[in-house]
Length: 360
Image (cartoon, rainbow, N blue to C red; front, side, top):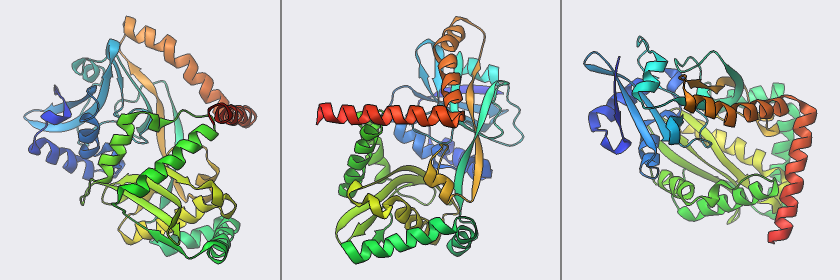
């Protein structure tokens, strides 16, 4: 195994084609966050992004995209935003993960959504379910599943959609929108949601806004940004922005106008999105790791992702352990305990209301 290191902009057409071929050769890699286009676009905005190109003899056998931070701390590309992370590699490739870290100039690689089966999995990691909407048998089969397993949610959502139409105007859905104006409406809703729930506003970072803008303008058979919105007349009610491969749509930024909260616009939107996505050839909507009620109601399957770190012995690894691991374990304990999780969530929402009052 030989490794060369490159900035994404240094990759040529041959490397990009090989990356895409490796990705499409294994269903485990069928996620847009593992696509070369995603790393290229983030790399244009983040100087920390690098790609380790892995050779098995004279041929390229794998790619390891990552961000390199001070002290040789490695993180996934766009860490904190992505729901699928890791290497893209040939099935028969033998990887020494510690040698890969060394050749990549890393002391540590930390991850929180590492896809299953990765050579980067250390002996100490936690696994979590990542719920999906499986559309491989079509939208009708999916709604049959909902009727059988989430019948109350499905029927109530349809009833609320009809009520919304009666009380507010005709309900319609647009998929794969290229106009940037609805995108910024969606981002505004998302910012309000972050503040309302006491979370950090991701869109206060200009590079993340620019990332989403660039992704929306990116379209192709193998990779594209996808914006879709539900409208009442000409007024947007709910929407989502994500990215897709040929067959997988990554659920990323869903949000809605709280003026319509009583109609459950998020659920109305997700059903509409699933129908249009299935018609466009999408077989899986990966909703991402996270304990959200709407995901439990809508899922009909799940993947598994891992959280942890891979580290080479040394001072940087020790410092990283002290700064990150105890806090991560404490967070995992809270999330795994329903009482603690509910208490923490309530505290964050209270903080959000107080913050909104001070800034409003």
